[in-house]
Length: 311
Image (cartoon, rainbow, N blue to C red; front, side, top):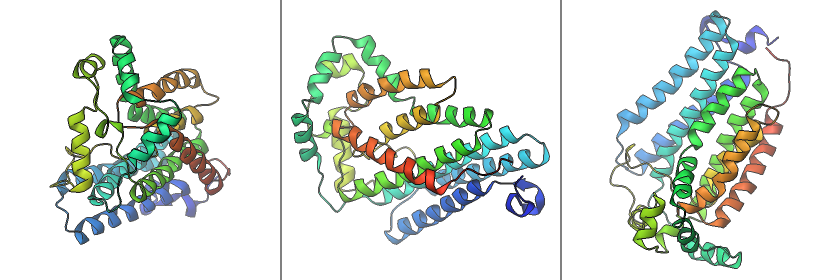
């Protein structure tokens, strides 16, 4: 059993496990740093929706801790707190990332394109092939946009199976890898091939691509000028190398091992590789970089969150 001092807070009404408490404290610190960075750099931010999302995060965690403590529903509590941690870090990291624009260092996409070519990969060639199979291309689009849903379903699954250790490591891997990915991207920024290579409009329409040449130009403007105002409607995926889409896919597959969800997760996220490449937001090298960052994140999380007595 966890000791009373370890697990109870807010007068014994809300109970958070040690790993959950540490991650929530870390999210709060990152949130304060994001606000301080935005204010120090005089960024225009639409604060109400971001703060509302952060309040919802705290509410989820508090409800989860309350349900765990007073309703004797540890699995529901584990899922709610886990969802709150994931949503909270996603919200605060969005402000932090967009406050970094415009970027000081030049884009490394030309180098990544040359590396892709050396590996035999060419984005317009992939799109030309997919244009002959539009149903498959559109199916890949659904796979591409399933990442966040898969993350939430994995949280629910691990909580339902009472796999506390796996869930906490899963969440910490998500936090650590996003920090690493953003840090690498800030030093050597890239935005993907859609801003540097063109594809015929019929091919784009046939495949239902999200990243069009116009969108690529928008990303280049973000890099060079930054957004006029940081708001949820302008927040989008901007980190190309290393690919966080690849990291999320690997997280789901790795942490569903030994569950009934492993095989479908492995199949869907095998399709995530061509899905991520086809949309034009990532080079092939980005996916390899995502694999390396994921492996490092798992190594860190395994050492920071050790097995212990279960509550």
